Length: 325
Image (cartoon, rainbow, N blue to C red; front, side):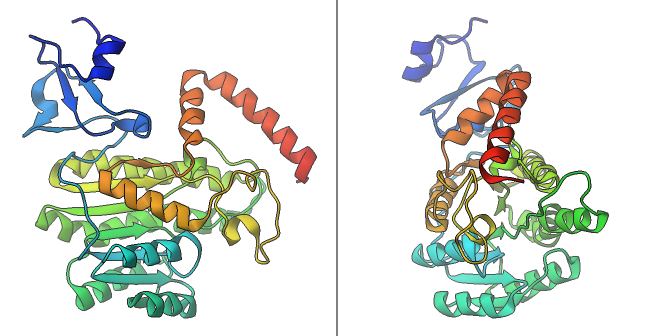
């Protein structure tokens, strides 16, 4: 069959007499921030079920927009940074219940007090803690509508990084997502609906100069989010993967807020990230990119991997020259 012309794609025209081109009014795949319409050339009609289109990149099923008003939301890593900004933004959206989970119990309590929510001290690297978080949240508010698996850590270093640090990063940045899905997914599947927001990083689509553990673990976090969306999208489970670049939090700026890195100049606030999340969830995008340029970097990586690696080597040399390390 003939491919769609640029004019046909931009106009949103379905080819007459060719039912294999299915139009979706949603924004599709990794290009979801740049397209108004998308077409999927389907080799069989099994891709289409009741008007919903299942596509690559781990997109969730394309159903009704999610509204946060009246919903119950759990946010891990909610005491500071992106997590705290999410809690405050969800409060503005009218969430019925906000559960602030963090290993810093006092910090979680402060954000919970501010947002009228519930604080639960949680180490997301411990599965029993995550199970207890889910049980406590459900006992307080009922069913969890949106679980934001947001907690994360970064450790600088390369192959010399000790095994125990690799393990800790793996537990927090990857296994915490698995533990959350294990604990929440059964109830969501029984209801036929539910939403996961996984905070990964642009490093999960690209890489992370100066931290092997972060680059590897964030790639794995993106992969798990994709798998969840692919595997359970047809059962009403929606998934978004948040992949910001530099965000002005302690992770980027340091404890005193004065650290300068190559990501500082283009960084955004945690509040800007939270705004992007609300819009992304409302539209049910898989990739939520607070930095639109990440999409172009991702395209370049896919289009010419060798050239992209060469560019990253040059960036690494520039970073070392300007900031040391």
